[in-house]
Structure formats: structure tokens, C-alpha cells
Image (cartoon, rainbow, N blue to C red; front, side, top):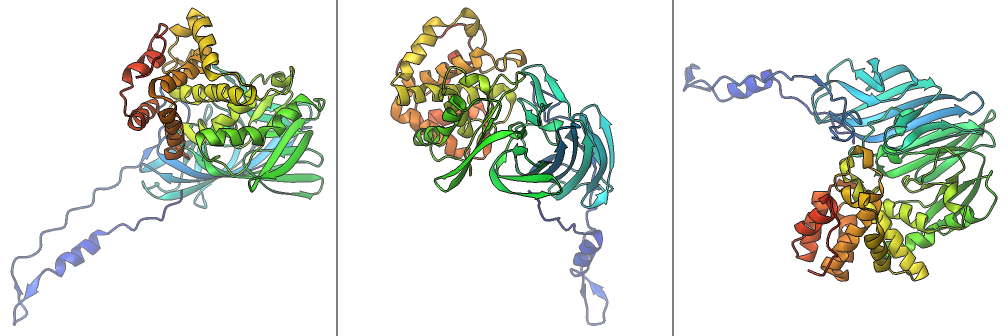
Length: 485
């Protein structure tokens, strides 16, 4: 957020105050003791902001010393030349006295940087943009950084998920990925602990669609180019931002007063993918009955056909799905998983990547709940199958502390889901569903940790749950089958 600049009291002001404490006798001579000399104001010590957010799993992700409130990103992309030009306005508040600060930006050439309208020095250190404003930034004060940049975006080789970020396609591009991707197409504080709102404008050749997060904010055409505008007014983690550019089959509508905007790659024949995405609002309504009010201002989904993307991602308000999920039919369980993330992972975001089970375990359990609701397959049966049939390797990897190499392992998903079911068995249905709704409500638009979730579960249920969570999240052998406490 942008905060008002604070007025500093000067030494002269303090001396004047001291002078008013001195009295005079009838002859005009001073009487009484003089006021104590004012304490000198310590000079501020401006230091560079940290080149990382302090995450133990990804120390170089994000940055320190400031908090972003809003991004305004405007890019122009030509699929024929793979050339992107952009401007980004970063509205933030300093949390330390800063002499400089970093933004994450992979590749791309920076043409200019301004801070509060004044030209600022900038240098590059690998995928870090280091900005030195003409004057120090005072802790608590707001500032605006404006960056102009251009180039041919390149994907990132991530040690966990493989290729991610900005991918050039035959008729456009896809910018997508977890745990990082945003830095490949705009300068950003790329860690989920610093959520912000977004205004996004993507200009592409006429006849090409550009889909992103949030509410469609209109489009305009001029000179053979069309600008698509999107607005996400709820705070969003940077890895949840996305853009899909290409020839897309678009469907629009409205549900509960919110816009619905979905798109499917035209290379896919009309069928299962379209049908599954059309069920988005039905699935969301069911999850709303379980988790509480839907947390965002728009609905939708995007299906892409690209062999480099073999996953679905909970991009905020509009998940993106690989076409592979729909080869065997209209798979709505994956839709339930990604929509559950709108509550758990998006609205309630991670504070640190180690706690990824909070996202994936709750979303996996949502799949089981949806299968029970839509097809009569009981959630306890889904648990029993996995409890008895999972390989030993799953039990050796603790989902609450998986390590970077196992961040998206089956333990995080399946054992994470089993942890949620063990909690349900231990506390009973009434307390369990109250825990889910309370977590979603109290942490809405914020960040959470495993310790906070456990504390809330104990508060709502009135039961001590340390032993349960220790066994299911941190143990390296199969826990005993859960029982009511």
C-alpha cells in the first residue's frame, strides 16, 4: 500500500519547544533553571534491501526491505518476432530504511527506472534488478518504482518443476509456473509472502486472445493490435499471475454477479475439456458450501495444449490446465483440486514454501469430497485405499518438511490429504468443517503457516493435536490408523 510520507521533527522545532519553558522576572531577566538540551536525532542509516525473502527452500526468491501493494503491468507482445516490450509500476512501502532495493527479473533488458518520478540508477546481478533511488527510502513511507524493459522472454529451468515461466508457442505464449514464473515477464518481488493486487494490460495482434487473472476490464483495438485488460483486486502471490496468448475458444457468462471467462486452445477438438471447464461454477458452489464464501471476483479456467506443460496450476480466479487431464473425458476432479486452491493456496497463501502441504493436502482432500458429492465415492474409502496401498517411499518423506527435491512429491499430495482426513477422524465432522471454514475466513487474503493451522485446529476442536500432526506431517514411518480423540 502507499502510505503518507511522515513529517520529521527537526532540531530547530525541539529547541523552540525548549525555549518556551524558560521564564522571565519583572526586570526581563531569566529566572529558574534553563531547559535541558534536546537529545540529538540519530541520523538514519540507509542500507540495501535483502536480495531474498529469507525462505529456507529458495533463499534467492523474493526480496527484503519493502512490501508491494499493487502492480500495474503493461506489455506488448508480438508472437511472430517473440518480442516483448513492457512497463511496470510497482507501488510499495519501505519496511526498512533503504539505500537500494531489488526486484526479480529474469533476462530482458531494462531501459529505464524511476522512483517517485525521479530517474534511478539500476544494475543487474543475474536475475536481480538492483535499483538505487536518488534519495534513501524511509521505513514506513510509500514509493513507486516505474520500470521500462524489453526483450525476448526466456523460460526458467526450475530444479523442482522443470521448465516454467514465459514459453513461446506457435501462435502466442504461455507465462506460467510454480514456484516461480512472474519474473520472466515483469519485475516483481517473487515470493508468496508478499501478496499484492494487479492491473494487467496485454497488447497482442488482432485475432489473438490474451487471458490473465481477475475480472475482465475491457479491451480496445487500434492499428492492428488489441489490448486486453485484467484486474485482480484481491491480493495475489506472484507465482499465481499468468498470461495465455493465442488462438483460443472463449466462453463468457455471469454467476452470482461475478463474470465467468474461460478459454480452450482451438487446437483441441471441442469436447471433454470444454465440458469440464463449463462445470467450474458448479464445483465452486459445492466447495463454497464446505469452505465458506468463494474468495474472488471472477470465475473461469484456461486449457492449454503444449507438451511442456503437464500440470494444472491454481492461477488466481482462473486456473490453467494441461489438455492431458481431459484425454479420458471431462475430468472434474482436477477442476475441484484447482478450485479448492482458490481458498487454500491463493486466498490463504503460503508464508514459506516448506508448508506446501497446506495447499496440496487440502486441495487433494477437496478432490475426495467432490468425488463423494458428485459420484458417491466416500472420502474415507479414498483414504483407506491410499493408507493401505501407498509405497514405503511415500511414508519416508514427511509432507510437513519434504525438502526442495520433494516439494511436489506424492507425499505432499497424498499423505497431505491423508493428514487432513486423520484430522477429520480425530475431531469429528462438526469441528472439522468448522476448522476449514474458520481457516479460510480468518486468513482470507493473507498468509498462513502450519503452526498457525495446528493452533487454530486445537482452538476450534478443543483437543490437543500435536501428536497427530507430528506423526502425519513429520514422521518417516506410516502412522497408526486415525481414531477419534
